[in-house]
Image (cartoon, rainbow, N blue to C red):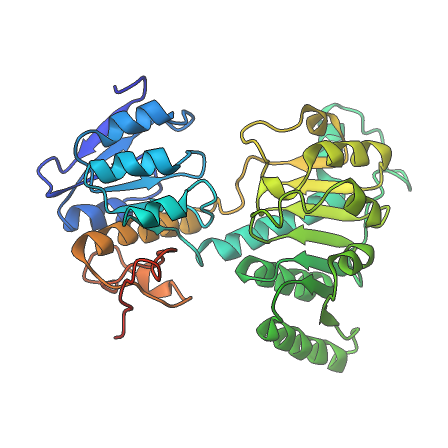
Length: 387
């Protein structure tokens, strides 16, 4: 027990000391660290979020690396603590890293890792599930059945949205947005409009080709285009999915004014970052517009959310489980561990989008000798894997 949390020690004679702040999925990540001669101090408490004091105690006098979580605040003070203990790398077991002061880490020469690529498909599946659950009122109907209120079929019982022929609006068309668009377009025959800084030529090509195939089979031809403005997307889309990064420019990108621009019966899905939505404004909008639906996997002040949201029948909420498939979470753990081992050994960075090479085996000999994703690699002048 340390600071109220339960810890376990793996490979106590290891050359490098690595602190892992949560229970992780599978054994491959641990095998990789042990094979790289790492001693691993791991917190086993699932629900307890380590405080700054507890994190400092865990780092102690000597710590070469930390595998942490989005729920922890890794600010400049924490990075200085890690540096003073000999730390060279911190990695989130997550795609996002807005909990990390990357500038401070860079200034101190600490590499900051994340785990992109592998959670995309799982998160896109959750986005689709949430859209369908909200639009077709699955959660409301489930509660209705469990309460014993169902007494027979009715023509107007739990009327919901039709997705066929509608329009999906993506705010952010990166990996997850692209994966979601392909599912909704191919599965629900939805057109796609997206708002992004860049044209996603790959997505547009895929959907044009899919649309041509459907047209030859007598179905409607799918449409895809990039919106000129966010407001255009909000007024057009039947389902709006938030898949963009959270920064100063996107904080509360969905607020009272922009909620009013959406269709009366639109479905708003957030599997991105909680801070993208003004939750107070959303609760008020959902209360005033009962045909509007919201489905949220993330919240601005997790694990808390605006209390009114949980009271509203037209809001579906789940506890940040977008990437929660066994395969995706185990793969994220492998990427995080490989970020650590590569930096400690002095290996180059991968420098490629495809992470498949890292998750095909669970031994150090079966994956590239490279760090999968270091977000401040260029600032630290790290070399790039060239094999």
